Amino acid sequence: MATGDVPPALVEAEERDWSEMTPACLSEAFSRLGLEDLWRGAMACCRAWRDAAVSHPELFAALDLEPAFATVGADAAHWWTPAFQRRVDAMLRSASSLAAGELREVRVRHCSDDSLAFAAERSPKINILSIRSSPSVSDRSMLIVASCCHFLTELDISYCHEVSYKSLEIIGQNCPNLVVLKRNIFNWLDSSEHIGIVPDDYLRDCPQDGDREAIAISKFMQNLKHLVIRFSKLSVVGLKAISEGCKELEVLDLYGCANLTLRGIQQATSSMKNLKELEKPNFYIPRSSFHMGRYGHWQLYDERFQTNVFQI
Image (cartoon, rainbow, N blue to C red; front, side, top):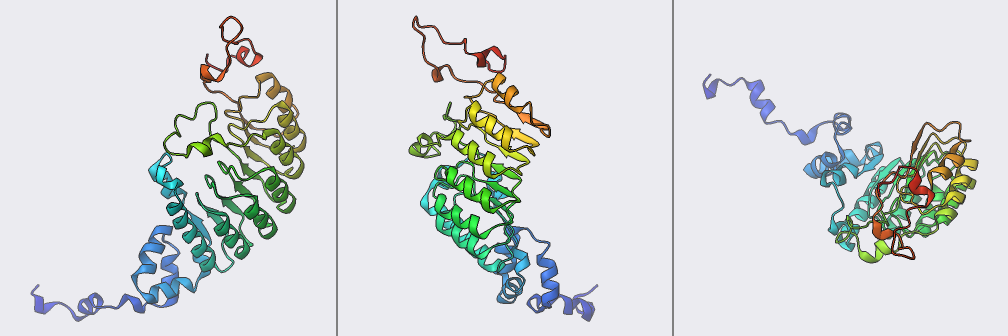
């Protein structure tokens, strides 16, 4: 077909101004986009498309940055810098503003107290909050989360060293629907995988009050069904408190909890009738983590090593 023989309908289609699509059509199209395509593609295309997106707060109901972090794999050193935190903060602030109260799911890392408080105050419908690896988040912003976000069902505060048992208490008191809690800390027995990435002082400053946190969980989070506390320093005292207070638990992950023994775990969990999945502290403990005996022999006769769980 010669160039001059192109049907008028095709010429008109090629010259169509896509910015003139109706808001209803744009909203339907935008709802099918992923987070990155929406923010960096559609909204950056033209003012008409940005205005159409902004006029539909439900498009911003979820801010999930985990896929972006997952593509990198392990932690990256620049994630722990103030510059990177400012970038995450900017996204969290923008998302909570654009959502206009409709924000329901937040999955970020390395945010600050100020941005988390900003989002919580404007997003009372948040039910999933994951802020793992946020060294600047403390009890201050968690208090605001507890007072504003009463519909929380899932909370991940892993590797947030400035968040204490006080936050667990206030969250438990104000968020009765919470069923999933993740409170992991870094592997304090062998931190070699994090050296050079996570700041040394932050690695050394891991939470020490595992039992106090466990008691707070047992008293104020009794509707929990899923609890992950990897490498917590709780003892059998804290575990017994959890088993007595959290009768609804179905999943309990104790991986890396080196202060527990197999016997203590069995005794503490024997009364947990709803428990379906139990992850025990099954991992290799470096010899450097233990003290030498009087004659230079390794003290391997503790009951924890009679369980055949640990490889020595």
